[in-house]
Image (cartoon, rainbow, N blue to C red; front, side, top):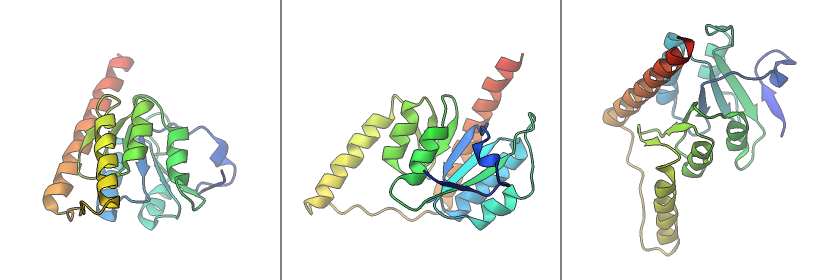
Length: 185
């Protein structure tokens, strides 16, 4: 898989020490702004993966901010266009205990299987224990749509959904801070 990284040449092979991984292909700008503000404020190293550079992420990345360990705060990784290329990158980089953000249930399943906590774009939380049920429901709804029995419409994202996402992100980042401070003590 070819990676076009927005960092200077040669850094794409450096190990990325991130705690937050974002499936940026389908992440609305409004939510990316919330994520970017939170990671800058809390100094959380974050990877955004997409099949195109996202100007708001690239702009934040260019500020060269680092976390307490000197790791770059924001990484924009641009992968080749194609089915699941950003997903595959996130799975390859993900690690147990990290946080991921995606609205893609099959990707959420893969990430949760790694031991990651996954948030969707509405603030829903998935873990290894809970994501299988959501995947089964998604697959059943897909079959019903294919048979013409059910037409699912995604509700528009309003202020309530945005606030639910922001609250869930804050809760999970706080949880991660507490867990990290246990290890440092």
